[in-house]
Length: 338
Image (cartoon, rainbow, N blue to C red; front, side, top):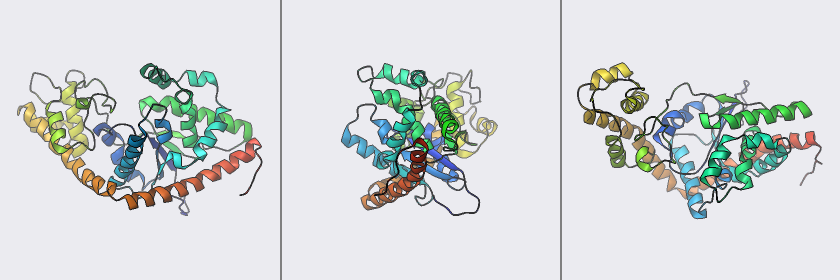
């Protein structure tokens, strides 16, 4: 992570919540690119457990999901010496910087956040200050490491814009302090839709029969894909507007095999949707099964996970302290040494 190459590589930061199952959509759109990214950027993958507690969590289950997510990242082939994989709560500077950035964030900006409105509607019995303020913690997550790039989906663009506004505002007052991050749009990957409502994006918060989870058993994957909504004309060709279900399955198959839509149509048109769906299931299982096997092995190695956690937290803290030392000096906090 802290490389000494003559040409400084850009820093890419991604925060992932340990909530629910990561889906095939997450895999195609982001996860499978992580290994490629570590050869191009200095990558930080933060398991953002502090964000998770804005919604009530079962403590035992939360800890379990955090370890599972770290294990999955490692099962994807990420090298913890190249890509920094760590728990947000293990680096106290996230919260420290969030407090300081609160003093440079306006109430009106937070009130305009659409995700707060959505989550407040879903959790009306727990509209807490953290839920309102978590875009500032997200800004701290990113700015703490001077990240150049942040992979963002449509639902996070507003938060990245707020992060940029806060960084620009702070820099204007105190001089060059924070890198102003850009959104990262992957060159490969596609938008995977719900298996039961192909007009909507596949989401881990929806009912289980609407998505394939990365860790689903092969038999479950096949069953879900066989039940995927298509249409009644039994023809395989790409037409997202008139054949959204078939087009979604074609997109999945194309993303995993590299075959064009034309090639897929030529191979499966007229053979029936059963044959086509089984081919999609075969491709998904072939892609995910090796990852699942590595995941189970890593998850069972508690000593290795403990070592990755400790070393990652130490490295992340060193990086964070460089930024915090600068911020302390800029805003006028007294320096000290332990």
